[in-house]
Image 1 (spheres, rainbow over the protein chains, first blue to last red):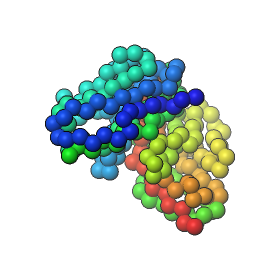
Image 2 (tube, chains in turn blue, purple):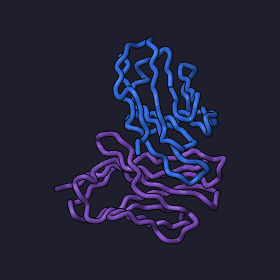
Image 3 (spheres, each protein chain N blue to C red):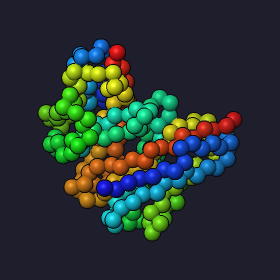
Length: 114
Length: 116
């Protein structure tokens, strides 16, 4: 079985550029989560979707961040414009729904904004 | 909101020995799920073990077992016969059993060092 797939695995960009992170959840999973991990703030939930619908985006730091899930097999997290403080590892995770299933994480995208 | 607390930022264990990582949580719900995740230096988050709150029996996965104390809201992870590959950051996580409360709550992690 293919796990959660994220691309790119590494991204280096300059401040002010647009960054798009992509995620393909595990087939059959109805919930998708985006996290950000840094040394300072640890693991933060940015947003999660149930059945392609955003449920809670209270963790999205500011308007520069946006996320979409146009269908059950694809999601994007976009940062526009990017800033150096956005440098982090971004994880996508999926989970079967309804409640109880574990989350399965992708390998993460390491983002460095110069 | 639920909170998950891991009070041990760092732990170490001698290879082949046993170590216990602590986790406590705060919730008013009666039905929920608890998890332990491992994050090795590769940064991949790996599910280690899962416990259902309505089950009294503690979950076990090979060398990994939990001590689930529902009344005390405690969920510790025991690693037996520790191996070098167990060195990682370990996160405790909580999830409600209610279908409309899908969010996971994570602790801040415990960094485990395994000494050869």
